[in-house]
Length: 348
Image 1: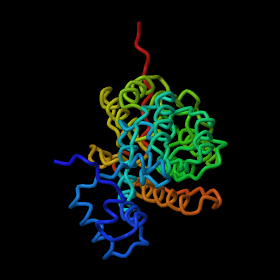
Image 2: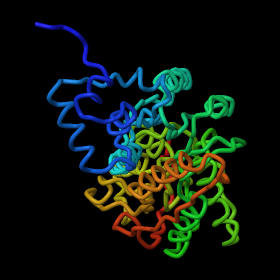
Image 3: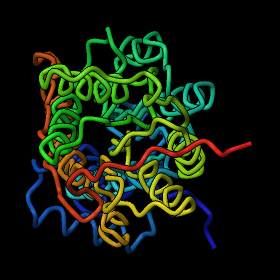
């Protein structure tokens, strides 16, 4: 039995076409007629040709692979965004090469360097906390198109798709103000991400516009986890001076906050209002249902994929920032203010 490796030239001769035509068929070029594609594919199957994609990349043929570097796939919001990205890329004929950096800058950098070795067409990047701008600029220096998704590294000239986090936090805060709340705490302030900075600024702006001064003791900075949301809520609400409403950086913190309230005998939505941000799927299933901001996770994925394709087709096109406006989804976790009696000190 012959063990000779079938080459591109062998396929071309068998199909009666040029080797360049076979190459275009392998890359699904729209320039090749459907009848010719069918003929070449039949020969490929008959002779058992296996395309060496890595070698094709070295010859300048596009890989049709898009790298997706996600900051934290444990967070259900980022998992949903990733699913939307994958669906969009598949519809565009691309393969997703996914990396979860788990908020680790060294891990993220290693993955980005790996993507370069695979000669990906472009990168969709949700940067890890405190990502230095030099890391993103290095990608651009390598001539790798980059679209930052949901988060952005300030000072980097790259395309971006995300939500209007500042306006969203203003909408959520105004909702609580309209319910009569003036004593509003903010859980999960995050200084090191663009999302964290923008949401906190939106919260403060809404209070300032209403003529209300924020209480620094009610603004808590901690990791965006359910466990920390639980612990910090218990600590805050057991104090002598507690807020009547809690605006949470994301839904994950809000879930922990509601569990924390119940653990100390306070019913969320009735005695203390809780509002989250992101509208992950779980938020509608909670009892009470979580009032939260819906930020179009699927839309972000689709828009990011299209923006990257636009950049590939027109590398010199102007930098574009696409900002999507969130909507408030009102559920039972937020309600009118009910004054809480001050806790009396126990007699010695």
